[in-house]
Length: 350
Length: 77
Image (tube, rainbow over all chains, first blue to last red; front, top):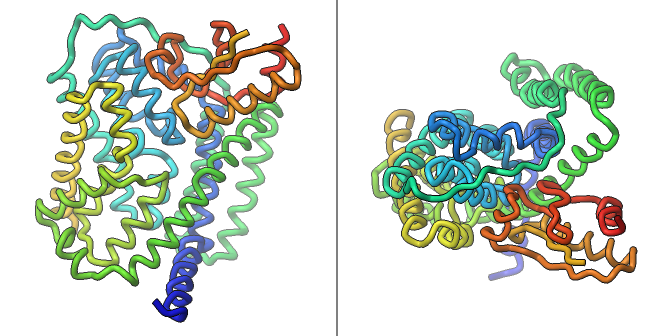
């Protein structure tokens, strides 16, 4: 490999990073980090965890399990302990696996970033498919394995009381988050957007200082910074190498394996996603790169569903928590459901 | 004194252990600090959100990384 070629590859990688960090992406990603940080620090998990008790009615625990992932698990490391808790102490294997599948998929940062980089249709599909299908996964697992005789203790919660203004803050932050998108769709120029956006941010900051104690705000900023610190370096690396991959990987192979919308390509994409480890958000540039190399839309959704939910390391932990038989059933279910969802999505929208 | 840090190996859990060690050193008390990664043991304490800090069997905090000041307060009570 000549030095020239190496320099060329590096410049390709850097250009990829530059595109991903374009102003319009940052205007979307930075508010998302603040929103995630706010959720992590100010949202009282207790208010949701009580719906996961052994005594909760099934329709409540499944619905909450499918949807609460975006509020409970802003960082992927939170998902596994919560899953273990719901499985062993709370509502059981059904809602637990529902949560396990949907939480990584509807992680707020991931949905926002997917919508921004891969398009709103994939972003929305990812979220909706994950929520709906997670209930299916949970019900199947429960039908296969639920034993009524398992002893379950109530869930103990340790938490501060609900912060009264949390919901209002979340709504404000969501407005800050989607305002640039709205303004772009109205055709406003960047200068006008910034002029409208900055007062909105100042208003949010001002109200935050009025509503929350210094400790709460520090906690919020701490969580936000922690997320940025944890996610951004790996994301930039992923973007860098994904950019190089587009130039280096042969299109014919990618298209042969995961191009078009056959059941096979969806399946291959699903399995690949399941085995690969994606650190938070890196699935987005990687799938984007594969798309540019010829991966079909259906297989993209398949990978988006299987990828964040599974990886070799987390499969090991899941097997340890549930036992190998249930673990492998869950893993196979995820791969199958991802395959079919991709296939259906690809047929409908490609 | 026995301090247990409950967590399955994510960054926040390691950070909690670091801060616990720092607090113990600064206060100068004789304490054993143990990291508990087994989910069954974690659940026995009734904890679902890690990281969590347990001092002599008492859960002091769960779901967030405590400050060194807080840990020092709990150690010296």
